[in-house]
Amino acid sequence: MATKVVMAQLSPTMEEGKLIEWKISEGDAVSQGDIVAEIETDKANMDVEAMGAGVLRKIVVQAGATVPVGTLIGIIAEPDEDIESLLSEAAAGPVAGAAEEPADAPVAPSDGPEAPTATDEPAEVAEEPASAAPSAETEPEAEGERVRASPVARKMAAEKGIELGAIAGSGPGGRIVKADIEAAIAAPAAASLATATGGTTAGAIVAEPAAEPLLRDERVEASQMRKAIARRLAESIGPVPHFYLTIEVDMERALDMRSELNARADGFKIGVNDILLKTAAEALVRHPQVNASWDEDAIQFHGRVDLGIAVAVDGGLITPVLRDADRKGLRRISLESADLIERARARKLLPEEYQGATFSLSNLGMFGIDEFTAVINPPEAAILAVGMTQEKPVVEEGELTVRRRMRVTMSCDHRVVDGAIGSAFLATFKEMLENPLAMVL
Image (cartoon, rainbow, N blue to C red; front, side, top):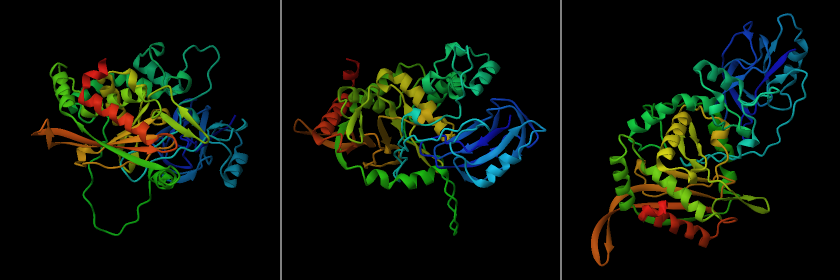
């Protein structure tokens, strides 16, 4: 039976995709679960798996082309199977739905909500919950299987000798996906990364080194990520009623604590941003009104603290999500955020790894920015913008002294967070940083 290879909708905001490359050529044999192509979405580069076996009979869309979701890009069939009817369908335009599937199977249209992306500030890309979008890793479960895993994950686990039952899946419904296997393989590497970087970049915005500018007239096609950013910019700052609250924090004790922890950590380093993430998570637990979203005519309070970490990448920015941040210690936050940032820079995050944040944090302090305001990622109700820590003259008990201080600004959705609620959250955030032992009480 012939199988269509379709430009799949791999994120809620995806309207079109760019076919980066075919992994196989026409005439090559294909098994179910094989990677046949790579697609650039508005958030990441994703692999496309074959949902049927046979031969790649026809490449309909060539590498480098950008086509709408639902467009037929290739056909897998038996060597002598008639595919003329499918080629006729391809000429008629995109098909309903956005998944690769057998040619005679019903196609379910995607009606999930479209999630906003980022703004022109290097701060955020907002996402809907992971369940809103199909994943390139998902497949129907085979009857009788006790461990839920994608074909790619099973293949990688078999090759590396990894027991699937020992891995907690991060995909929809607890499914084990490719990223889970990669994380299991690269766990020691993540620790080495944190040590090598001194932990200072974990959770922070990480920018690729800029190429030497060329002063010439040139029109460059926008990436799928940049198109999504442009399309959604006004849909955040316009409809969402923003207001801003700024507070200055004394960072002396927090930085002293970091130095003491790193001195005892036997090579492992905690970054400043790790402390900020942990503090924000603890403050959200104490102020659940901020860990909430506007949902048409209701306020949705979230039972989990899932923090979006703003990361600048080539061509745009994205917010990988640190799940259940309030339940994790500084060491685990540092390791997980470093891993997320590394894979975000390589554009290897899966949809469930950058969707569904309940609150976001953007740090531009490493770029020498004193303070700034960030645009909220709907449906989140707030985002925290962090400036640089610097020595300042301050008056304490009538005496002039020098202290390390940091300014943070919270952008609030006034439909969810009132001034008093936002102020209370920032007061707790400030108190915890200025008295970091409070986080362990």
